[in-house]
Image (tube, rainbow, N blue to C red; front, side, top):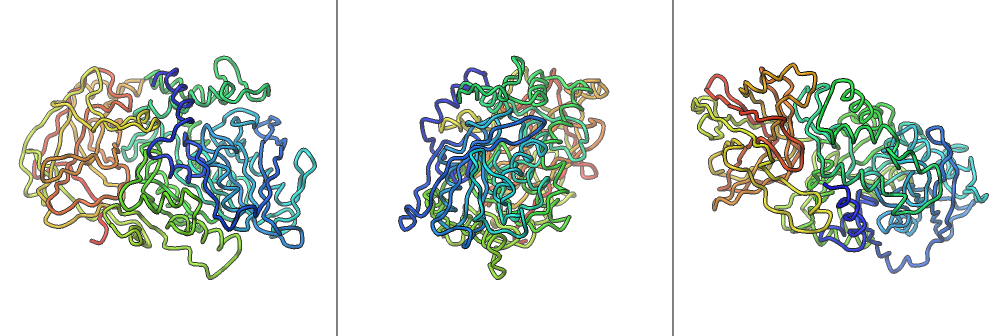
Length: 606
């Protein structure tokens, strides 16, 4: 994305409502979401007061001003305290956009003290954008918890002696927010164990995976394929903050080379845009991205956590929440997970629309996700021990017409229990003995020849062009028509072996960018031949070792293949949403009954 275009996109998008923006407002600050205020329930009008506050906090060795609003329900005082909810904005937002002040309004109307604030570097808060670093953004949020616990005052002397406390200085407090406002919850919980409940929505586990994904299992330190559209859009929005939100606060300015981000973030983006991965810079890039990501500090998070992730999300896919969920569960932290329909890439259609649009009006009680959030806070903030917080895992099914039955629950994610084999004649077959021997080859061009999605089109609310793969630049394997519906719920895995002499010659290059890149994905092919790239998701792979077989974890999906439809697995040479191969690298896949690729599917109800 051209920098000038990216900046114009953000300015213009804030003045119009794209077709999928209403539900994104419910992400309570989803990255790049258009401000959309939620309408409060009529019976709750005037049931709270709002007090603007400023806090000077120490974060990352700097004094930062935090701009906040305190929402106090009527009737809540020192003798009648209430638990609190803390929240902040998504990337590029502030406390004042409709999707962030929703936190204050919605929860104050329901009896919670709410404190919403502009994250560091955004709105009228000071300091640099530091990508939810626990030592900076987490430390700043912790000092707001101090305020709610009565340990400190706002800059004007305001104190909060009306929040329920578990101990002196320890308020009963939860956090909620989406995207950038989701990861900060985990960052805060890692440095402050006073948090009693978290609801991170549509956020990340590992920024290295999110922005430069390598879906090869066990890739180690091998970087992936740069997700240039999303990353440069965010970068320009961050660098443009002093222009979009004029401020003379010197803490908001770094240098001319890195205007508004911390230096490490700028160096990371510059390295990614260079298209080069020298060993020393790559190690630095991965170390920084992971240090500021939950993947590196989740072992310190103990707070009960309800993860909400979107099925339609090419920025932070379902694998991000799954990784966080598994880590928290393995260490004994109370955790549950919901895979809702919508995410950064839209996703509201069919039976989801009415309930989610109702949710966007502030009626939390009338949608599945809203009720789950309220139950989570009731259980962990109001200590209502008998509150049912729902199943360990729930997922939205867009093929169910009844809105009361669209979500299914389970105690665990489906296992990889269905195996298909990649035959040499392009078929996906059920038994290894059905594999036909064969050799098939594709090659990349100098320009991208496959299209999955355009984040620019999504940001503007414009229709995207259909997914496509140019002839000769991809290989496909297609199943026979299904005799019964097949419900895939989770992340498919494929094991492949490819032959690429040119890639093999570059195997030991000191620049990882010389290694082979390919893109794996799954389609749904209807009886009339219409192809649907499921949720427009792809799995970029920078092959760790082209001389050996490798396994690819595809992005998680929830998709029903109807009777008569066919499942198609594709590997492509490029994708125009990502950086691709350096040089022309023809690829051959050899299949035979004793040595062929496999595709494993997580199937629900099998």
